[in-house]
Length: 462
Image (cartoon, helix red, strand yellow):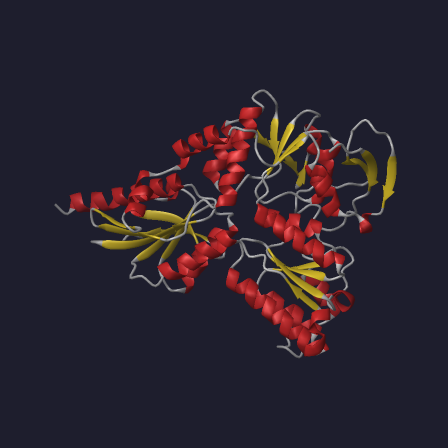
């Protein structure tokens, strides 16, 4: 269906770290022109109040543009075959054929039932591959890493999919010219970035995971109902930055401790006494609230959303805490006027966490967690294992193993450590899992290193 194009003047406010320096988003100091819908030849314009800007309507109109694609370009079979050649693993195949358990030499490997590439990640990478196939000669840019995995990101660099350069923490979109192709990663992109790209008349290839889009729809519902969004996530994470850009009023809480602080403030210190003054509240969350946030005004009607890679159980626990808090504050009979919740927990994240909880119940000597060191979902897999008391080693590639029986690995809170003699002598049983952005090939390469160390041990014992 044909639609008309309008040019709108949209002014994006600055001053919030979530949309300025820390997000790497291009700061705007004057109104910019954006195509709202239809045909680019129209010269009509309207003034848009940013407080009333309908991000959902903008997204809907953008998806109808001839310069927007989120479904690929008809090269799916060919690109999936290439990805299979590059990312699949014979070792993982052997494990799956044997009930996710197999023994090589004196090493028994137990693989989690759910692990590795999720559907949304595979889809994002595959569409990015298609973009290169469809536009062999055009410049292709990407606004952030396609996923949090160094192997895949390096492969895209080899395909000349270039990252938008960043200077002093700010993305330099001026390198992008009309006719260029720009990929939006699996985490999505903030509204201000999409507006800039739309205005530049570039080909947008949107690989945003549908689960992330589902969260955006949720915070838009919060905004429509005048609810403040409590987003369970990490305020500097690309996905949470994008989600916050679609929200109205919001506050981002990283964990249960921060959520309890917020709820204690709502109850005037009657929850656990952790909160203090309004000034202290705003200082504590200065990088994690919407512009002009007032805790006395904006914590009356609350809705829950989450970064899709957070711990499922913690998101649910935060939701229950906020609901109980609103009941205590406003009465059980009035809770529906002050609290709203939709299920935004990603199925793939939940499945991998559930599989990890099951795996840690096995008799294991140690756990090997493979995934990007900036991967939130992988950090939570590591957290599950550490909390169970199992020696657990989180690596992003096989290069972290060696020389000899040494490993450089991260702990659940991101501390980088080196451990000598991490593989015990004699027969061992290793639990293995991988984050949702991790190709099977990366796990295989790590296991080959493990087998090599144990083979050398056996030879020395002869």
